[in-house]
Image 1: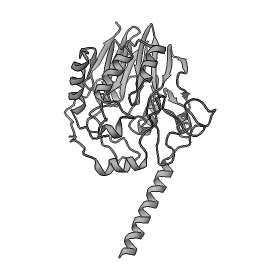
Image 2 (image 1 turned 60 degrees about the horizontal axis):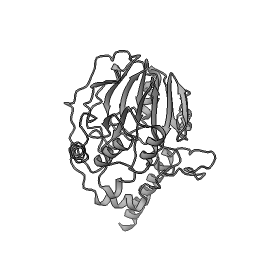
Image 3 (image 1 turned 30 degrees about the vertical axis):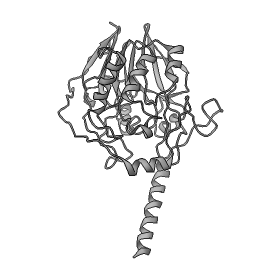
Image 4 (image 1 turned 120 degrees about the vertical axis):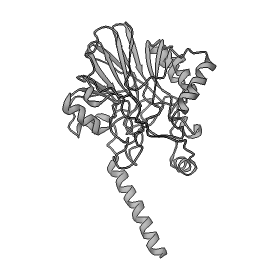
Length: 346
């Protein structure tokens, strides 16, 4: 009996390794820099994501708060209007997916319409809220910004659908272009931190964040992660992506700020001993808002996928407390509703 149990365990471990290897992507190949050692990328504030023993400890000691499938969330099904030529309109889909309409163009950030943020649609973190904007209601998509290669931010099934229907330009961090190119995506441009590109009337700048990257077991930190700053018509929209807190946000403000509009995550932050290097807490999110001197900020990355131990509603409650403690008006840093459109700069 022991022999068969050991054999089964070894086969299971072997299967996990094979799957982990098959999911791993080719890493970036390029010159060494202050954040690339020739093999892996490094965080600007020296904050490494947790190692395997910490991941194992987290898995064995988790105390996740409850999530409930909430399909009463509003879903916009009517077609979106054309983008404005003046001003900015932001529609919150959910998680880190926004439709940005500005300068006569339609832009999506980290688009995810799948039911799970996982390599498999039968396992992995399940969507607990429907996308606030139906895929069929999208306008012509001109540009996609991808912050990094995690499954809750880079969803291949959604990208395939967008390519088939709209064939948009895609902007990615260093190393991610190879993953998309080998799957037939041709309109892909990659950026290093602080790089700028002029595309479709926008000046796009890639900004540093404290995070990590991986698609499988053997490609950890082999591609870059970033945020993006969009500059147009004298207006600056900052999409943070994912990040732990650090000095980098004051640096971003010194080099690029102040921001007119920011999209900043507030969720997937518990327990702090494990998540703090890669995800800001609600209190830290408010501090980021202050660090980049954002005139208006919209919260994201909460309540959709159960990615950490904070449950539905926890981030919003602690966020409201943090606003009061730091003296920030809830109108200047707001929690958006799915499917709703907000106008700025008009």
